[in-house]
Image (cartoon, helix red, strand yellow):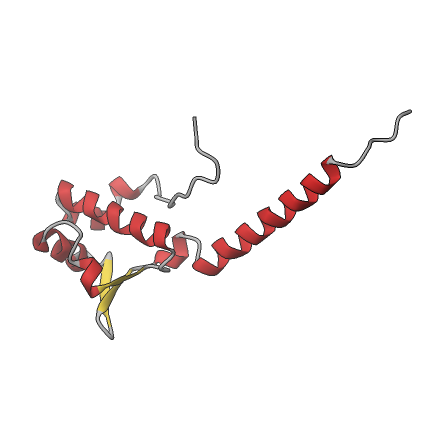
Length: 119
């Protein structure tokens, strides 16, 4: 059973066939997924700080991800996941969706307490 308001990331079903994925070991592929999940869960818009970057996988796996073009270094110190916002919702889009759902919930709750007209 799915939990309510489940946070998720989008992963293209063709990812296993993408030529860039062939450059990654199996463990580096999982590290890549963990990085995407971190960005989605923390609403970073695809940015990973230098300090956090070093917590993912091994140095070799992180280098594979860089070499394959899945991430790029940015200034001042950190990394951006290549094309993240082309495939995932931005922090602002998530906040907007959350506001819309809260408004709809309030409207639904208010309407639920009103007596119904009978025929």
